[in-house]
Length: 423
Ligand code: PMP
Image 1 (tube, rainbow, N blue to C red):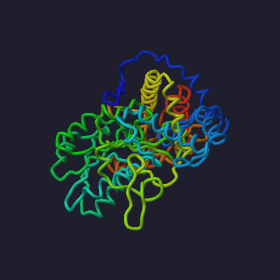
Image 2: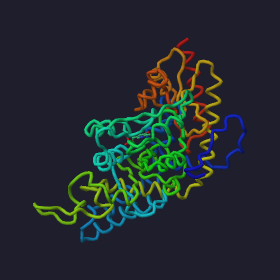
Image 3: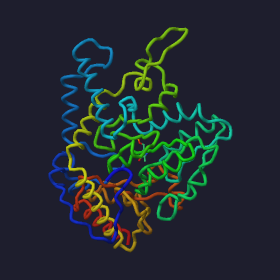
Image 4: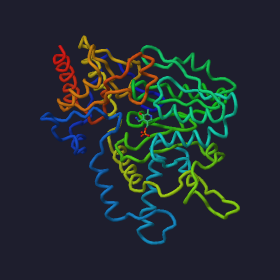
């Protein structure tokens, strides 16, 4: 499965039982083996942040215990080791998403910073009075607010693509909105609130046919499908380490070299310059031009370790297992008359967002926690999605490949118990 061919959520067909060894994989994640309020932990909050395998935890401790120093320019042994580990991680990211060049991998704080970087360095110079940025109803706030800010500053406007009742993009509407004033199309690859997998490759082609560049917010896609940025042909791709089994405080902006080359730096400071005088500063070459100041060195090394972990995993097996679990969970929840799913797209990943009749999602989340089931309740930083469905919030269970049927059964049992409590 590649980014261009997301696996469909086949709700009725019975898929072959996955051969993926989930129990062995669970043993790689020490945090999963514990009880919460007397129940085995069912960790179903992966869309907010996923857990880290022992390999990542150990590599961070090893690096900090043996090799840590500030990177670049250091002549001493530790600085050279740390620089190598940091730059090796960049190479791993490049290979992982199949970028053409390591210069296209900008290491940032997370998806939020990656999008802000594009809004500032690409958006600000590109946008003029009356220009348009097209985005969708299902964006995370971090792919709305930076564009609102830069549009307000430049006199440009946002155009918003509608979604249907299943939580799928209206592609006809999208096509209509792409016009001569559109300077960028920016959209989520996989929705965190609904789980919808957008047909990113087709959408990129649609925009490119009109000469419009595309930013994909891949925060929720990278943990659930293979990403090939050359195959997608997107101009920018943003994602976060902490949602893909790596540490927090690290993320990636992929950008096509020819675009990054033309963009001004995002921040000024150390590392992003080659020569500084009070009269004039010469910027460093890519990717350093966009990496001002001391970065999250250990975090980047941890991201590299997470990629190493994912590379040795039976990825296709893991994904088949996860999709089968999503199908199973969706069906089990649908058997409960009081439950309504929010987001029933044909192509989905990871997310089961739902409502229980007469019970506020925050109460659901709290009771589920008493059963050892960790979910999220709220608007999921996607308030326009909630407005579209005229609801204040949902309860969201989100899967990773290390979840098993016990986790989903615990969720379904806890939901049934919650309904009993409120009867
Ligand atoms: N986009 C999406 C789709 C997300 O799910 C998230 C995190 N919930 C973000 C962007 C922001 O990611 P981060 O907080 O890691 O910057």
